[in-house]
Image (cartoon, rainbow, N blue to C red; front, side, top):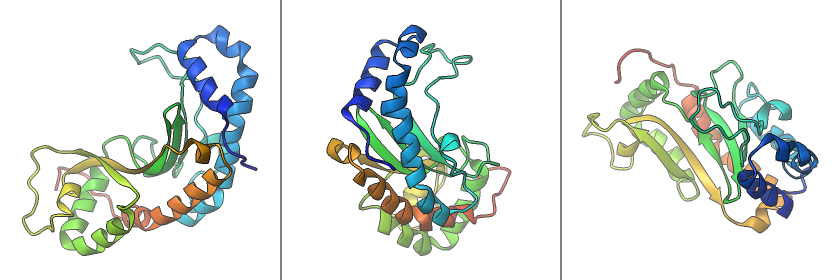
Length: 226
């Protein structure tokens, strides 16, 4: 059962940020398990039903959903061995993680957030999305208007892509996207440290279902940009 994160969670993130080394982590492994890993696994379990409603083919097993604290430093300029944050990512397991349309939650010392999207460019999906948006903009905008009071669009867009003049102004920022995520930030630390956090994310994920289905049902198009 998810009972919320705690002051110890944020204290651990701060501590590992200042003491990012193997010796400190090994000495405080129980602290990490108790305050970070175990509540994150419990949160993932509590969100399983909402994710199943979104897409029953998404990975929901907590051990596969919750990120590891160890960083892969082989190809990174930052050689810090541990993360000072954690995330949960729900996606179809057969799709490469960076381009998979994922529902997620993340948390650090600064607070938490959750949303839907992908963090690497997905040209085939966005080509299909552009065609759909140009053909039926109001259908998509109805979905986005229901979300926009709570969720913010974080966009990675082509700078020189021509946008059809026929698109409504609200749809124009979406047309040139390479990738994106829509996110709701949580800065209410009392909520994050409460069991009510699970209910907040459950309700948010269910609001995101129409957007997920709109995108996941598109027939991806390879080749150049539309």
